Image 1 (cartoon, rainbow, N blue to C red):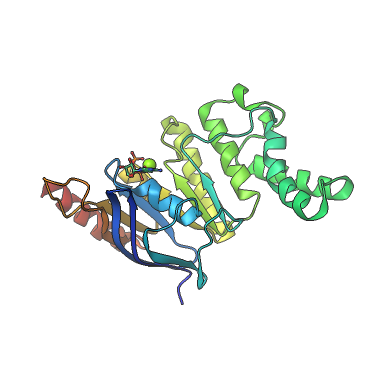
Image 2: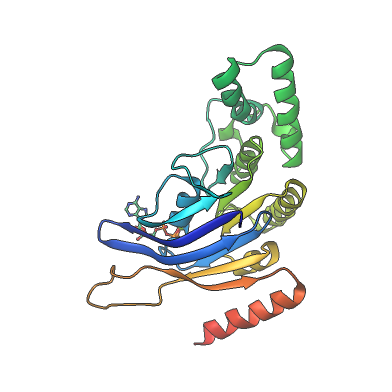
Length: 256
Ligand SMILES: Nc1ncnc2c1ncn2[C@@H]1O[C@H](COP(=O)(O)OP(=O)(O)OP(=O)(O)O)[C@@H](O)[C@H]1O
Ligand SMILES: [Mg+2]
């Protein structure tokens, strides 16, 4: 049984069919890059994986169980524009991810527990390169720093799945390269399964172990919302040979 399965999933909003006939299986530890035209349903798909939206038809299972339709700790998400808590410092923004969980079961943490949470948070803050900014507030950080804070916050819960919705879109090239290395290392170290939406096909190729292209193949000019996007290409990027083949496929697609 696969880690995640998507069986005949459709998603519509009222009479707007956004996604149709999605059938996919994903194994733990894959890094899936997702590309496609604006408005074709990539974020909608991530929202279904997160449990913020449910399929209109079909089902998604995670480790053999129907995905619960509310966010849980198995799934962390980082958006392009992430709203961290404005009134908390970097350190407290990261700590709070764990403190909420503790509070739910054991009451607000103090003493040893709090120290352990702080230690864990500091490690993630170091890992994303925010050590110097530990005591700053979000409004004092650049966009890239806020994004790194959001990643540290998501990782604090040790999620099995990380959902990245154009996480690096707003960053300048140098910082972007650093973030790529960071995400790649975190993926390898933590055996994460990552779904990343990107508009940068190069980024998709270099980071992913698999690439999905979302596209609308059926069109009815009389009824533009009658058909949804599907995954038209599902390409392995595991080896250099795979990447070369995938690039050829994408180039040919562009020439059609
Ligand atoms: N909550 C919602 N209610 C109604 N329609 C929605 C909702 N969320 C998304 N849609 C519609 O679904 C379609 C797909 O939107 P989505 O945000 O998933 O696209 P996307 O591929 O992520 O685009 P982009 O690349 O611009 O981020 C759009 O037509 C959008 O208007
Ligand atoms: Mg989107």
